[in-house]
Image (cartoon, rainbow, N blue to C red; front, side, top):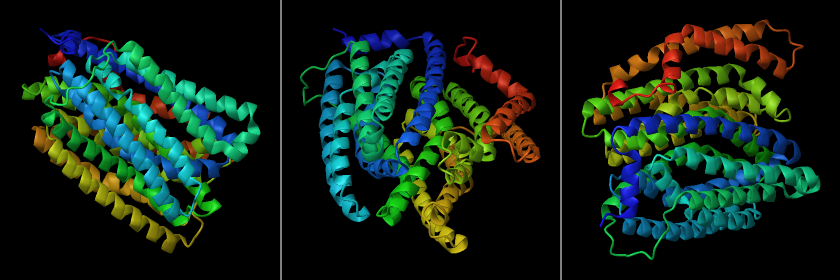
Length: 519
């Protein structure tokens, strides 16, 4: 008898319908991502006017203590669920039970880390915040497998609808709280941000349990899971190291400056600046990686098709994120002046972090390229090396910022050095060696990859220079939003004119259907 989960999955994405599902799913996910980023920007713009930046700083002291343990309970097993060609109902039930157990472990770890880091940061209040946020790991574990099954079946439209619905619900709750109870926002703003997390996860879970018909049964603990856990464990460890590399700077800032109000404010500004810079990366790579893994996994037996599909996605990253990184570098100060006028230091942070956009997108999707080829062991090794390089860069940036800048305020000197070091390490030290190493492992020539992205990169640099000269020529009396209204359309139009062949290709990917040979 055919397992119901296995049967429905095969029917959804079998045969020549795969690429049609990939293209249709990508369109839906990108549209959802655009809406999601708009919700994020609007929410940030409203909340930062009501909630003091110190409250944001307290939240960001705890967020790594929540997400680092949770990484071990989500990505690995979810990726296994998506990547495997066949998955039985018994395996799904066992994975669900294991996810729930690991969610409990992650919650306990967050509570324990809260006590530890409250001592390190000299902030006793972190204990209670950690205890409350720990429950989100348990709540998240209840929906991980259902989300993975929707992704496995390429039902990406339903999945992103659930996620966007949850995000919107959480944002509306937080906005309503600060508007109707402004005194709460001033005194207890961090708790509004905490309940925002709960509302988002609760709505997502309700939605995916309704959209995905599979329901867990009592697990059979003798179900064979060794291969699944080995693959997922290495992938999860790699994801944990990549996340740690992007989080060590915030941990260092909290450790060095978090015991003061000024340090908490600096951490809040720095963290929100980093989140803004990563928005374009998330906007593009999240939908791409959600379809890359199943598509590349199906093409493993055909090396030529595998290379074509991978290069297709790399070109998509180059056409979109290279101009985004250059553009954010040029207009970042004005963007933050509009979004958060009280955060003057954030403009410099955004400018310093922006070049990393050009590297981070390629690094993100390369993880899916290696995972689809079963190279999770080498993915783990690469993530460890990159994490160590970033740690060295942060420490060097902190020291240079203090020595050269001569400024001891946490919102300047040391934090500026860390921001600049992140971009330098990602662009100069990591990007090309990591791509070269990964391409060699999966049989792709680095030269073929560079051919796909060199012209969009050149067009982006020319566009950036043109926008910079235009900004320099505008009157100083113009407000930041007025400058953006002028230069952003000019920059977009200039890039589309120079790189029109690549832009037409990109638009064509979302207009026509094709099979794998047309990539």
